[in-house]
Image 1 (tube, rainbow, N blue to C red):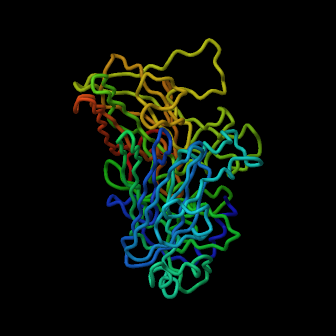
Image 2 (cartoon, rainbow, N blue to C red):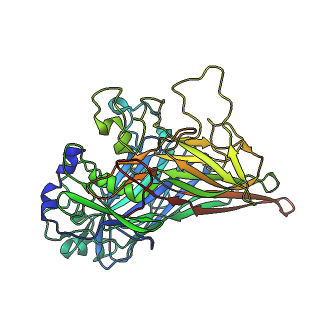
Length: 494
């Protein structure tokens, strides 16, 4: 990672002081983080992206599988001013496939993708190159690993002059000049933001749809992120504010606080720490419904877009098998648990009258496999917490996820409740996960996550012989907590 980040050193030296990166509550920005895609259980994922600005955009699109966050598809995308791009992630029975009928330019050119989609359009299967053969990480090695995960879109640069004209001067656009953009071109400019996007997980046969909007990060980079083709950049790790430092403005319960991290040094985690700081949550809260009378199910998607730099052994380049992950995460992927990197949570709930409800773990087997995933833990880059009495190691009942964490056995028994997960916590222990402080500002407690709650109700009486599904998706509510770097206890955010 150090070598990757140093590729932008020359640009950083020329950068000027500018606002810090922050989560834009209006939903637009330079970086869009999408919490989940899935083609499990007969579902497809629809996504839409809009350039709401007056300037042409050069973007990096990255899909990551859900176990370890490794890349399964990435490419560049160019949007004209006020242009929109739509695509569908679907499956023909194996892994996931991306399909688009949009004319916007891509690099590599979409005309070089797989065989044209029947009826028009372009398609490209997701690929297992990052987790097979010499890059195997202990997780599954089949193409089915691509069937669920998360993805992000990062604005690399704005374009002007002939590059912008190529994207917007004709229909279809002239994509040839956009296949290989010179970082030194005078028509390449720093990102300007104004992107927004939405996603929807759809099951046509069942009549269900769970959707939401991407988490938007604005003022992510003050320089263009275009690189030569030999440079493999981790775009989520190279945000910057000025030479040697990066700032993140974190919204807290008492206002906002600015944290500053170094982007130079032996352990160069400044960029990824700043982005993680924006996503840190001490706990998340939402609703749960498991009512037999209305056939309801609830599942929470909790994804960690920044997790892999802290936990992936390939990125960490660890000197020994006993080496630990980088905080705020606990485990190196595959070292302690097979195909997983787990961080515990403590669950609590309250019923409609405000009475406390606890969730009891399933009884352990007589012989406990130390390599098996623990209960009440988030073990993947994309996690699905399901509230049901189904087995913990099967597909979740609503989203069909194989990345599930079962949360059930409520005591006392309830069918609905308001639930809080305290992240990076261990039952009976005061030890918590913490993102360390940087050059300035406090440490932050918890884990960096985004997500949503999905609920389905089944109506068997809408009409004779007719079954109806009603679905909704809502954002989860995260709570950041600042921590004293020396004492370790909660402290006011300043």
